[in-house]
Image (tube, rainbow, N blue to C red; front, side, top):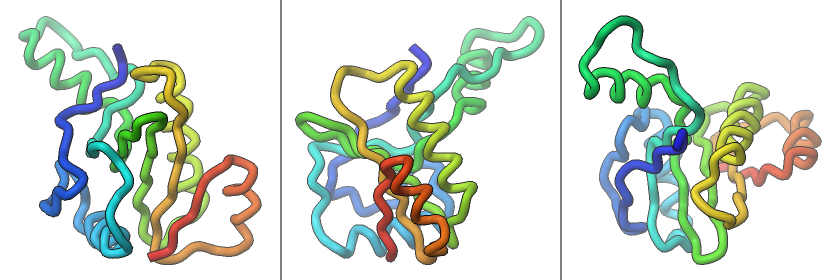
Length: 145
């Protein structure tokens, strides 16, 4: 399986999520202050896609680690009873953030953990209105914090 959810966290987890950048963490904290998350549990640094193979003759644990760290990473993922919510955190989000979400959703859909629907949310501190049609076309929800 290419998807690696990693360790589950409580929706009340207030610590620094694994591999989250300091800028993304500030956005996440602002978002969290808006109210309780409507999820059963959370996952951070979710690996999607196949990753790369380690070159040469390496130990199995090194091979697995290399494959994991070369996969694409979803910042945060909420699990619901009937769906999943993918969160992309990006300061001053632009076309790159939209592209990342499209890539993550595509890789997720190649190897989903189950049949539940996937909702996608972009959390940012600023976003240009001229890119809103791209969000609508890609069914991406925008949250400004």
